[in-house]
Length: 202
Image (cartoon, rainbow, N blue to C red; front, side):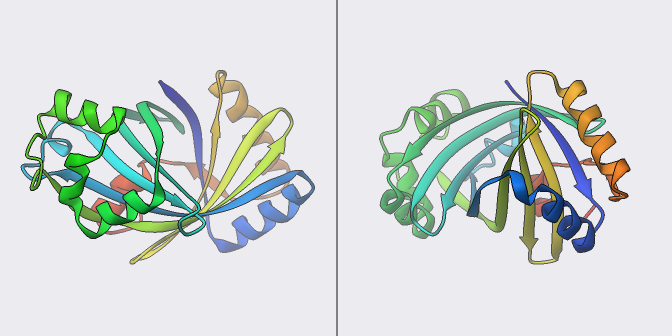
């Protein structure tokens, strides 16, 4: 179970001010491309599951992940997540031809076939499209903060994510910091994938 605090920043100015304040704690920045897939008969979406390929910095790294049973309440997200690395070249082939996912040797994709019944080896998967994200990672007060600038075709979303075993404590610390510095924020109400599928910012 992945448990994360998710706080939405009001606008580009809030994002700019936050990243300036956090700059002494900067660890790394990832340029991500997130691409999503479903079964040809919507086997995954019908059961609130999401299959994603995430590429880092072009084709430097590729991670396949399966998320299910997501719940987002008061800025705290809980979701079942399983992920593993995939050869980026194989991942790019699957983006070009989603049907190839059915032939990839992968524990995560094996689960998709077994648990969700996506079994057609050539026509079992369809691509849903995706979006780009610039993720700046900061090591701050014992927390790993991920500050996202997510570019959808219909607008840009700014968000802080922080995975924590004590989400309420992490949320309090973050909220106090944002309030002290006059940075406008709100609790995130939908996952990035849900926003992508809705076709509009919340």
